[in-house]
Image (cartoon, rainbow, N blue to C red):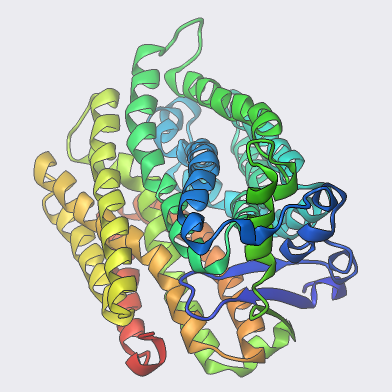
Length: 479
């Protein structure tokens, strides 16, 4: 049961926006927390005497393009490092299970327990970011998870494995929502959806880069200085996180007013555009409202299906490819890049088309069905590596695109006070899927001796998700 201080949920909802920024916060601390609107009142801002009208609306495109190029590539690089340290355990599994005598169930539980730590510490991390700023918070997160990820190399027992995975989740907690909140300080809602969509492509990019890198490290450094390949992988792949964590302090600015790469007129224009969003409002609603609205539960189930199929796929693609008969770790790594590359293309094209046509329902139903079908076919053609990888690519293209598309549904489907508790509850409930799916697949593998039924398990969530989306009235979400 949540403590009393957690009873209020703050959700910023922007009409017509594809994404929703969800901010969990402790009530006493939120009263003193800085907001985008308060930027104009900070002491550096007081020196920004330039008139925001000096720049016209036509100049905004150039200005925001400059801001995007300054911030988004660096933040994507940080998220690639984060996601790589989160899922590289899927590659380590190819060696460490035999070396340490772990069962598939032990691996599945360890892979999933990351999200328990992530869930529990997400709120405190966000509150801390409000108090000390984005630079210090993101740097603290990246350095901590880099150290813990490197420590994974010295795992010897299941208990150590569980503890380190839990601590890794606790260290990374608040990173993704923290970046989303950070972007709201710079971009108004009309531009924020596209920026967040671009940022989210860091997930499949991490797979494109991480797969070949992990395979190469494990194969090249195996037994170097007495350490196994999977141990070297944890140590080497932790280095980018440590370096980027330090770079955050020098590269990022907490506020618009601190950006030395902007002149006074540009700073004033950016701050004015963010502060002008008076149509945004914050709802304060008890989480218990969630239990009184069937529509919220319906959406929570859809999100659970989305996260379940996606997280299970991310942790088990290397194992599935290995089960097709591919032996070389480097080759397995190269092959895992293919499904992720297909997911990048799918995310960009499908999300753009959904925005252009204002059609939401079928843009989720079809990818869900395609993803589920790809999972099943990858199993049926498991004896044929090229076809199996092609079907995994189809599955990734379908399952991964559902994640950014989902948040266009509750923003249109839920209104008023129920939206605040509903959206927050959806986000919390879906996090359980990231814990359950890897553990369930590990248990299925131990029980049946094959990953086939694990893929069928993931596919079932994709088809259930498609059915649940079809149950949503089109007139409520096609906006």
